[in-house]
Image (cartoon, rainbow, N blue to C red; front, side, top):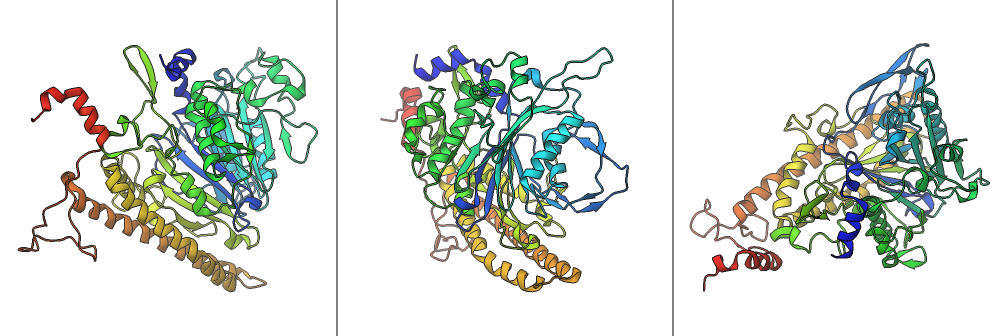
Length: 569
């Protein structure tokens, strides 16, 4: 029995299940680690039940005593009501008008700490806090106060929180339920810790709690609930001094699934952005941790990147399938005849009484939407915030820039334009899915063409942004009046909408082109100008197509399985 099978059997086949409901990935880049001084945070919202659309909430003013109904983001289940604030800020996706960013990954943690009576689920916590906070530190304080007052309705969560100057990672888990004689929950609230990512460094998290020891003396760079250690002692999760306490070990102990299904993605992001180094060690020295063999060989929480990181760099990290590593999904027979880096769920399977795994890479088929949020402190808030927004699998989709001061989001990514059970011919999510699902069948042929289109468009828009910024700054002026602000918002709305709708048109054209070129396993020949070559007699009949067949590994596997039946000589 090989090492990986032994570990799965030892740890338990169910270890992957907790990561599957909302299995997301975040990469956090401080302004000192970015190419242009931006704060950058990426997020893939990965769920088999999440539709790709860009949420939009305009700023509002509310009467005193107003109540805000809370529905659980994952399920739409009504949870209760909370007090509304007098004024809310505009939010576009996971950013607000002050360039604040909040994203997440779910780590689950100890199941007994879920509070069934809590009102604030993690999704509502994100989007309500974006409506109320200007800075990362303010956001942390508001999130902590909301769960303390109303209870926390989710399992363990890691949050990425960034503003124009700082980036923080915050980890939170509830306290479960313990009622008094009147049925009141004596444990309402959550335990949490937040660490500031040092400037010049990067961080990542992917469905596993990552903060271990807390520097209780450093009040500038650490925040935490007052009972974060005492509650762990009360529950029997920890014995020892405060200095020995580890949040992750107490509230979300590592198992094989947390390592191979979650921390491996962090390892991959660090490996790429660290240029093969993680801190002062070769990235391969941490492979035994990422692959689940050595939980004691922990990855660092923060690293310095090998070079400064830009929007395109972090976007491409989100497209990773472990290529070139021992976990590369394109090289084994599971990749089929076309080197497909995908494995359908569930994440484990049994053969002859032994349990095996399906890898979980950063790029995955069940993504609802994915983003790179860009906060730029040197530009006024009306211009500085950009959410680079994509739908479905990052590897086969393209990001489009939307400024956070827009008056409305583009039609093709507007909330309500389709759903997972309602096809919309005007939805970017649906045309992107059509392309992705075609690519999964013929990955080595189709995916490179889709990636070339995405690369060209993303690079072009990154190149256009300085000119758009400059024109917006000109419109806004040095001492902007209300009409100037309105004019710049209209200008950026038009740019964001036209760019997104042009992407929708390009993907719609690509959808048709791919079907024409690759239908039935053939590859139609093309002329130098890209048009399809005819047979020389009729412009309605194509030239004899290429038929390259399957990968060698696939052929060898078929021969081993059925060679005696298929042998033709």
